[in-house]
Image 1 (cartoon, rainbow, N blue to C red):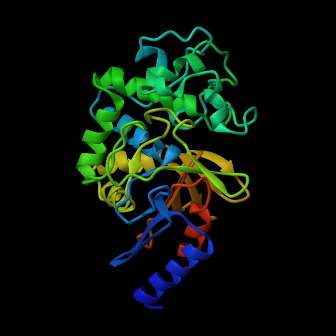
Image 2 (image 1 turned 120 degrees about the vertical axis):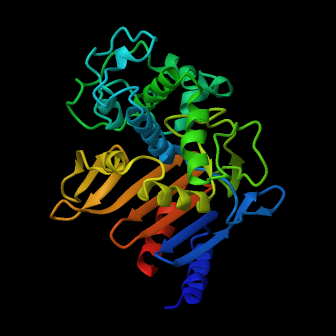
Length: 340
């Protein structure tokens, strides 16, 4: 199947899935892109390939690279303890929590969004005003005085609070806001000119509004469902082309040195032994039986936000799918993987 036929097939698949968003797929020199649905339903403004989409937890990878950059600069180390690089007090936290523990979701700190207790991220904001959450520090009342859930290093447990703490570390070590550090050392370095940590009540042009489906084929926006501004655990906005630039910059050592990049991309915690899924500083990854990396996997889910990206290092394949609805990215990505 030639490139044009692949593109036409994927345009059909988007419509079959009622997908709303954009995708970008590249295999060596072959590039296929497309979009479908509306970035603004009320105004009937269609999504385009250059539309900016929220990616929820997909940007935890940016946080990890920001931390690695500070390690490379000699400001901190992966075994530096949390208590030694932030001024805030966490009275019930273990004193031996390290940056490594936070990066690998093995810190045992209480997660402010516990998926076992809450089915819906929107529930967080019923008693805590989302419009006041614009910096990492703003999240602290949600978990700062709670007790540990596990001992550090004991078990992998996906944890948003850990990444909020990493953002605090970046701010206090770099002496600037977390978002400005990422925008300078990652977005600018990779040429991601359409990306940023935008505020929900001040979105720039070409930004998709997130939509949540309700009973009766109705839709509402997600403006009351997310923090006003994203940060270290999620909430950046990107274009699909910018995410392709990010992967290229990361894998060609433009963001970090070759040695540090390999450290970031290394597998560390087994998440699913049956499926050979591991977690490292760079997020999830699938390994083969020889423990070589087949692909890196990054994902993000929020109300009105759905994001998936994979990178296959051996075949130089990269796929990015961004949606401004709560579902659809994974289904489209699976089809693209087969076609590409």
